[in-house]
Image (cartoon, rainbow, N blue to C red; front, side):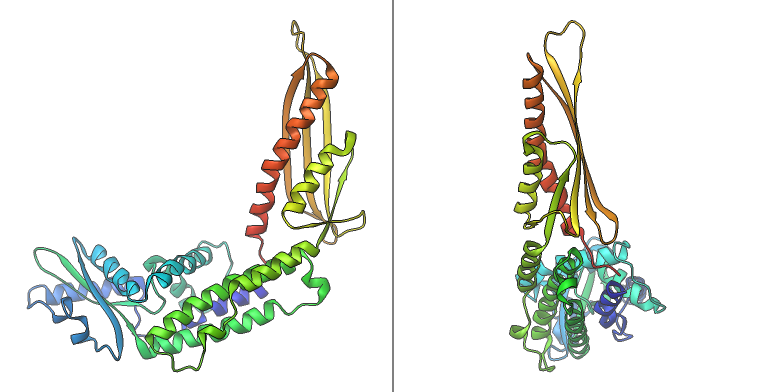
Length: 360
């Protein structure tokens, strides 16, 4: 439920955006109307002087042109974003990625308010600032022209509310007992809090430019890196034990333990919540008319949450190695497995931790 509330509130500001803000479909409809009524008349003044039509004390505005309406609108929105500087431009990709995750169902948002999902979809499709809109479109025989705006007073209220909502969500995410905190769920909560903190700093930068009458001090907002650092500290405090059914000289166990240590986990004893359970198979393989001896290795490893009695992520590798003697063939098989574990398992753990979301 917490994840649902989080993403809902993050976008609530979008849902409550003023009625004058267009959805993607609205923008197209508005553009059609503008083209049909204006392309036979005089060239609008906003093409060369946006602030002559949209006063700078009320709007942030930019215009551009293109070979068709779609290109003109996209370039106008890009020109509008450019006013906010390179740092905001770069950070908008993070917000866009977040919006795409919501739109594509990576994060489930359940709401009876359909305007919420429309706002998410629109901001993702337009790939621009929340609250930005195409205000007018005009064309002649040579090109299409569009003007994009962000109304200062409405944007100021919108971004102020989103920042305030996000701050409350971060507080809820990080309010845990020690038992809850020092778990993979606690780790994921802090990682998610870091992402929200990053988004808040983007919103604060926009707020500074449109006019910050909210009293919010962007410099006082906690950085995402602060939460990521705490997430790393949590991982270091989570013990993970490695249990293997068959392991000569404990080489396979050591290989897995080394990867987990590199990922920041603490080595645990036998009674831990998280256990890596590994099955190792080393079997001779005979090939007629071949003087060499071969050994096939198969390794299955499941990262288990014993409290939930669930496998969080599996891992499997196999291969075959040969030599003149069976003992050396087996030694080579183990060495090959060690190399694969060092490379492949590290990637698996990294991928899982990156995608980890708090439990609902």
